[in-house]
Length: 238
Image 1 (tube, rainbow, N blue to C red):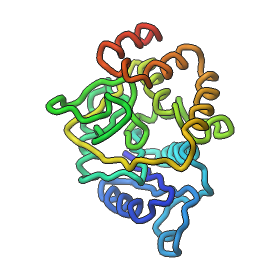
Image 2: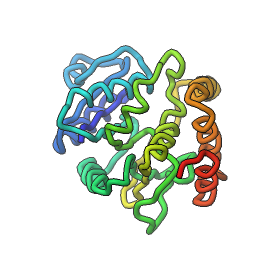
Image 3: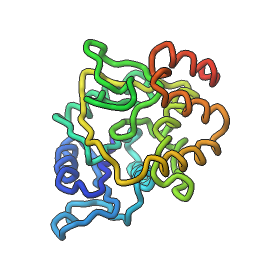
Image 4: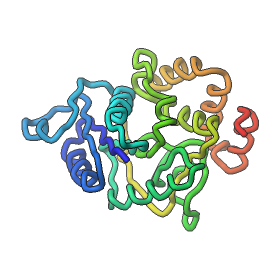
């Protein structure tokens, strides 16, 4: 599994995550236009201008192509807190031993998406999609998503939802693991209205079923087991 830590101005946390994950296997720290000291620059594997979420994900996928021995990508945003990175890798790799699993993510302490929130005693659950802050994915699936055109969707909304759509369409599952939890800092450096507008334009290019899946799956009433079932029927994802 290749771990890609994606950073924008959470430099010390990014370096800590890179160092922790590097004990588990190949790891790359990719930076997007951060304000960096010379020491910080020496700790970063890929220095980019500010390419936002889409550019970071595209670069992580490019890096995966270069590591010919790895078929799994673990994408980690640097603004998350993970108690035991090695345990996350171990649980993710174990989950992918099930050939039905295409995308894996730890649960979250807090999330707008109901199905991402930690549920006591639930173990691993099949969900419509996983939130794009920390997730592991098979190469065969991320290659269907990337590269994403940043001139249409630079801020990256809808990419995680569409990956869920592609996963189901390809006969795989997206799962959330309640046995491990991450914490994600709130707040964004852009307007939600701008991100939604870009997402709407980009998802329209992916086809009507993809648009319907995005529109429904991001509503909390469809993030229940029954709502997810209805969405799969509507989008012919069985």
